[in-house]
Image 1: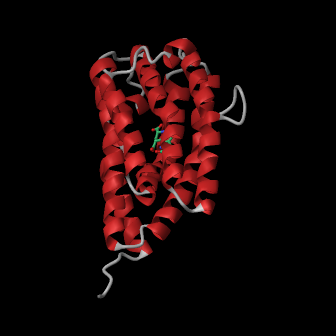
Image 2: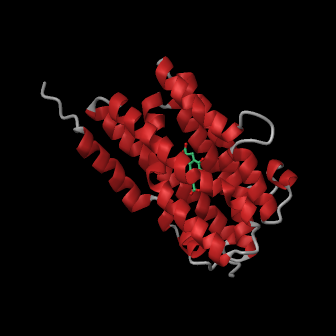
Image 3: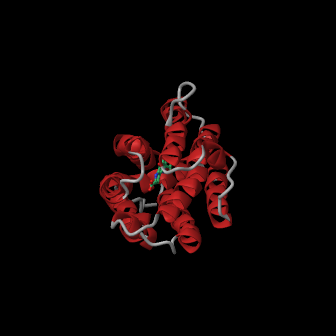
Amino acid sequence: MTSDRLDDRAFTERLREVGAGRYHDKHPFHVRMNEGRLGSEAIRGWVANRFHYQKNIPIKDAAIISNCPIREVRRGWLRRIVVHDGAGVGEGGIEAWLKLGEACGLARQDLLDERDVLPGVRFAVDAYVNFARVQPWPVAVASSLTELFAPDLMAQRLAAFETHYKWVNPSGLEYFRRRLTQAREDSEEGLRLTLTYCDTRALQEEAIKALMFKCDVLWAMLDAIEAECGRSAA
Ligand code: AHQ
């Protein structure tokens, strides 16, 4: 049977087309954020709700590791958990996001207590974690490829905060500065694994659908945040 498997270039192009159409850099909330048009309450609501996503990333990544039988892949993916959880107290991305919250005037405990987490954000994040638990690990890896499009957004966001949201203590922006390189490293690893292990046309199509699903996860989070917090203008 002739294989109708996409070659790496065509597969990569299909994945990039998903982001070009659906990545959350185009969501109205992010567009307004990057144009400096959000009020402080909208920024605080976004930071408090995105913390729920951030603290669930290592749980999602551990789910992928738990489903993966290949030692070399697990060894590489394990790095992500340490990036977020930190190698020790006071380190890692989750800690840096808590510092972003403090830089916006939010109490750490309010983020940790999930006091302001919106139902739509909670459901979208739960859907992402459960996706990673039940999907074949290469398909779950493919869902992280939204990070192919993250570095440009991080750069735009950093510039926006430094220009339009000077009331946020600049020390809180360290998270986004780190993501410029971490997102690039993550997406290079994720793309290499996806191209290697989504090695049938069926798995390639599942990977493309996984990326669409993840774009919907990120979009749905912003829909909920926009509905609740997006009304307050700068
Ligand atoms: O800060 C982000 C992060 O740690 C991750 C992990 C990765 C994944 O495994 O799905 N995705 C992701 C993302 C982060 N930040 C988002 C943003 O806009 O700040 C972007 C998001 C992503 O592109 O998936």
